[in-house]
Image (cartoon, rainbow, N blue to C red; front, side, top):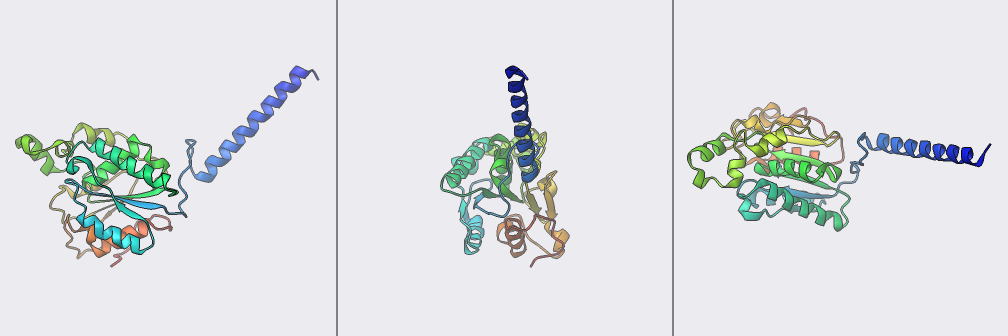
Length: 256
C-alpha cells in the first residue's frame, strides 16, 4: 500500500472516531445541537428576577427560604428601577449569571416573577441561557403581554415607561420571543393564578414547551393574588420542587 493511501486511510479513521465521540456526547447530554446541558443532579446558585418596578421585597422572602434549604440565592437588582428596556434587564441578568459561574457555581436556576419572567425569557434567547440554566421557574409572567400595559401605552404614554410599552400585547419585544421556540431540554415551570388582578388574561403566563400550571387547577380554593405569588405557601412548595433534583413534572395535587 502506498504511503499516500495509508495516510488517507488514517485520516478517514480519525474522522470516524471524532464523529463517534461527538455523537456519544450528544446522546449522553440529551442534546442534538452540539451543546452540553447543565447537570440536573448538581444544583447551582439561584437567581431571582423581580417584576416591573424592580421591587425585591416579595422575592427576598423566597430567597430566604431557598437559603434555608442550603442554596445560594440572590435577588437581581435591575437597572433603571425595573422600568427600563427589558432587553437591558436581560443583559443585567446575564452579568449576574456570569458572576455566579465565575465564582464556581456549576450552573444557575432562574426564578422570574411577573415581568421578571419576560426578562428571563429574553435572557435565554439573547445570551444562550439554556447552556447555563439548569432550570427556570416563572411566576405570573405576562409572556404574551398584559392588558393594563396596553391601555397605559395607548392612553397614557407619558406614564408608561419603556418596559410598560414592551409588555403591551403585540409589542415588538413580545412578538420576537413569541416567534422563538423554547430550547429543547430546558426544564421550565410556569405558574400563575386565575385571581391575577394585574396580568390579564392570567394565562398570558402559558409558555409552549414548559410545564404550565394554573394554581387553581391543583389548589381549587386558592385565592392568591398576583402580588402574593412569591410568598404563597403552595407556590413556594412548587418552586422548591422545581429547583430540586427530581425530574421536573406537572404537580398532581396541591402541595400545601
